[in-house]
Length: 435
Image (cartoon, rainbow, N blue to C red; front, side, top):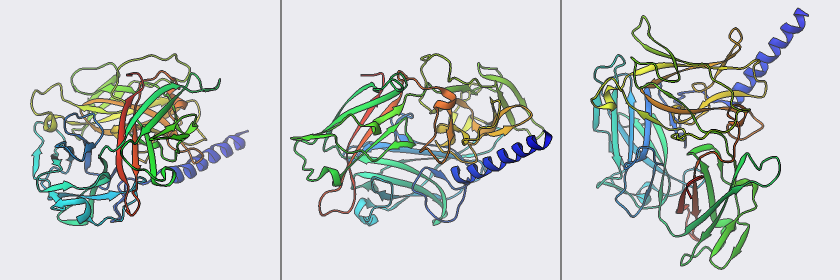
């Protein structure tokens, strides 16, 4: 009997290791190769935020023919002053680099130096906060489409620091949409289906099946983005997308949350607060609950984003919010053999990797993880990832409800005849409950 138990234990461990090797990626691998994705190349880079400058929860997307800017900020916890610069690569709809030369999509300079920085104040963790706005007077985008913004150090473009995806659109088409429950008894109360129509009056799209690409995202996630979808009907100057399972998403559930804005007061989800012998702050969250069998409950959330704030300080939150180790624990009777669990949200850069992966603790009968986060209010979910399914599956832990509030975006790309890059000719931001 003991031999059988030992054999089962070894089998589970080997299976878990194999899945971990295939389903995850190494953190902070700086092999001088630019990754066309949201990625941190150095472990000292924390709390990367990128958004349209007018609203910190917005998608990093601006209109080509406007004065809108994108704001990029991050912390370097080495706490010194470094010479950082940012440059850009134009990408196709699938986020591979386009064939455009840099002089064809940028005017003025091709790089910007990050000259706005501040040192942390009144914090145990010393860090330097960097911020930059772009485009600027001396660097402008001249083409619409996808762009990869990447930061590098000391003028060496092989010394990569971070990269982030941004979008620049030039509206040539309009998009109308409609939400509905998915058809079918199994999915009617779980899934969200998106029907939409693209109107191209006054703009020529000769071969939409070959030249036009549509991408759908949910809550700014790229792991479950829909990228291979074709029109169901075409007529006149409109292209209709409906009756297609590809535009059906898990409804999921409202995001979990915790509040670590104060190191003095215990908030709803905080079980313990302490400081270790190395003068590092720690917060322990209460054990989580599985929500798969619980009824749907609506409450307002940030759809996976976060707010940086230190309630114990009234100064500049960018440099007076401290860092803290946050401990997560998810009770689970046996280790999951179908894949690995990850913490998903902006707090982990929406990535499934070693940093965001939960590890099974056989003594506690559950999964645990620790993240080093800046003080604030955070949203997150737990997802399961394996080789058999694209993206993270939140339904295993969080449940699945068609009436969940989610943000969606429809991106419409077109490659004109005779050109060699994808334009972003239309985009539509949608909320599932705001009609």
